[in-house]
Image 1 (tube, rainbow, N blue to C red):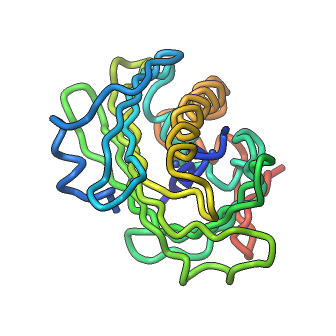
Image 2: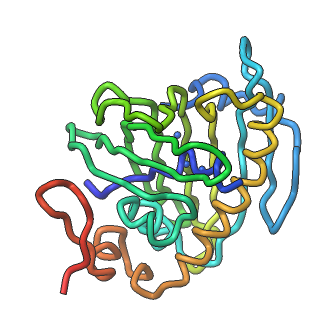
Length: 240
């Protein structure tokens, strides 16, 4: 099973990232989403989560690359420190049947480092236009490294990526995220930062998807073509 996405918190700290879902039921109810911003060809919708001052977000945008290439970029989470702003560490903890567990640490500069461990599931299915890729995640901090002094542990982080073929060369990407920032950041600031972060997340993926190493027929071959391999400690290295 390929590695799968951990841009969950980057959407909060690319100013910050990504989906078990915010909840299966809430994501399927589309009539209460409100358009919050439309920036750089990304439409961002939001709604309040019942019982929380934090909003959940949904972003939809086109990416000028085949969805298998976009999927390969998102799967390449252990190389996030090379192309995702503020990401300083990504580590594969373990594989568990149809899911993987991974740890990520962010250095957002405007505040103390944040970290979290997630369990991520992935699936795909054929359509008339080609394969659709979906992945979703939820917290699994109990399976990752213990909390570290000076690093704020993020406790809420749920989300989803849905990658649909728009043509042979384009992808319709939909991103869901519901997360806190950790620490004592007011919700109105966290919500605003999420809007900026989601835009930057899409920009980073669009840029990386142009790398021809990812543009092959399937995500696993894309990873191999990019020269990605695992070490015994689960960290990603370049293969010669």
